[in-house]
Image (tube, rainbow, N blue to C red; front, side, top):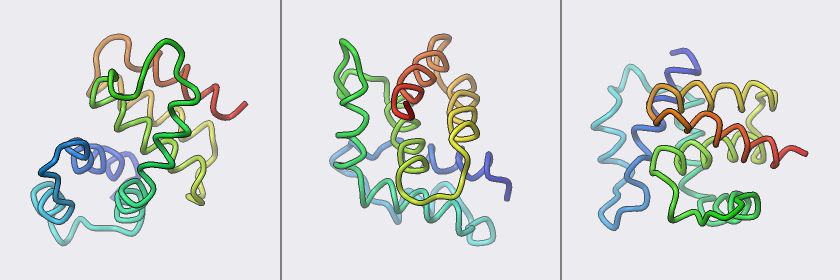
Length: 126
C-alpha cells in the first residue's frame, strides 16, 4: 500500500476520534481489510490515538483566532496526523508531510482546507 493510500485510510479511521463512541478496533475493521494493513498505517493510527492530547496541544499553539474544537473534523484529523508525522519519529521529510496533508485536504476538505492546513503546519516547523 502506498503511503498516500495509508494516510487516506488513516483519515477515515481517525475521523470519528472525537466522538464518545469511538472504538479504534471497530473503525479499523470497517475501513481496512487484513490484507491492507501495513506498518505505516498502523503506526500512524495508533500514534495519533496514543498521543492525541499532546498533539492537540501542539496544534492549538499554532492556531490563530481558532480553537481546535471549531475546526472541521477533516482539518482537525489531518492536522493531528501530520503533527504526529512531524514530531513523533515517523521518518518522513517535513515538506512531504505538509504536501501530503494539503493534497488530502483538497480531496476530502473544502476549498480552503489545503491553504489552512499549509498555514498551520508551516508555522509548526519554523
